[in-house]
Image (tube, rainbow over all chains, first blue to last red; front, side, top):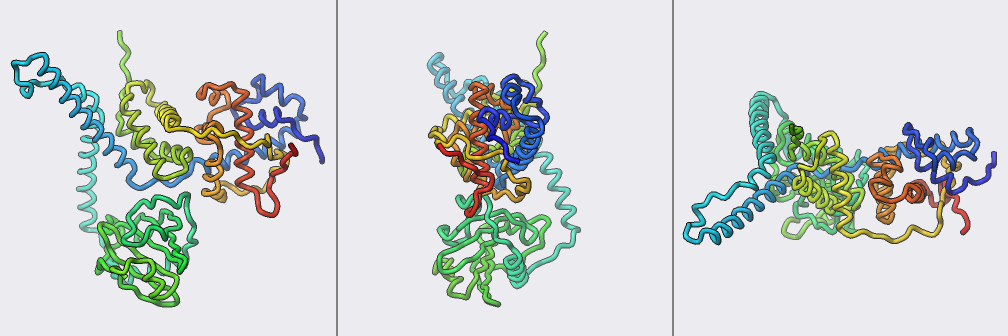
Length: 276
Length: 177
């Protein structure tokens, strides 16, 4: 059925309403909607609300960088510490000016900043004790927990398997890789996404240097629950099979596994000469 | 008699809300680094004014307000939205639009990034904070009619960017100027 187009004030009123909040009863909305037949209005609103629900869910999703909470807490603690230092210095200068005969260093300035920073310190202290208790429990559990050990060949095989089954989807942003790249040229990174690999949370970087495409998997070397990794060197030792070249190596606290769609030449194009 | 204020630990706030604050910041800034900076600044500001949080159950909304204010101080883009007032016909929204997991996250962020800040804030208050248009008007101190107009335009723009295809724009029926 063809209808007259809805007027802009009607569209605004429909768009502004939230399901279940009775916005439509508000005067400015009710007035705009009064002229629209109920059945037509119900149908349009049903579609708009359905779309709004999907969009709201999508808007509220975004991957959160690993370790963000720890970095925020560290920054807050550093800010507290800096403020405390400045407060002590300021009080010291004030005291020295007011009591020139006294040794300013011997004064005990009122710990105003200590009061301000008390809550975060208490929380950190509590968290530290809780963390220690948890760590002790984990250590005991892990000591008796049998874990698989993977060697280089196993890591290569798992990387190949992941590479072949991976949809190589890119996540929201292609900028600011969240981890170091283990020597791989950053300008070849086309995008990244969080992944789970070798029982660890990490990142997959999709690489494209115009000569070849590749995926770099980066996960932490140490893991409480994932399999142990043995025999990984600090220099990549590539292996080529079935048109793909794979190498795994460690740098810092990370494991890097590079899977290149091509032979040794293509593989080398992603690494500096010193590593390739 | 003095009423005792409930105490809120900043560490608990970080633990409970850092992910939501970061996601909101990411939607506003569109970049991982900027979002993390904005998140850190938000919690720093929250820490410095923690005594202003009187009702712990409102912590999330309080943090979002700090986030929006902090973002506003960073410099906002105020370019107008395009001349076409409504480039979507509500009755032509297909019934088989993709569900949320199929909404391309990169395209969604690009569409949000393209919105001027006045529109972006209204859309995020609507979709992220789930505010009514009246609440949005109060929080942004703008008339409800302005919010309704911005919301309709911004939502139309998002839908057009998200669901149009090269051959046939979905749910898009631009009216002649």
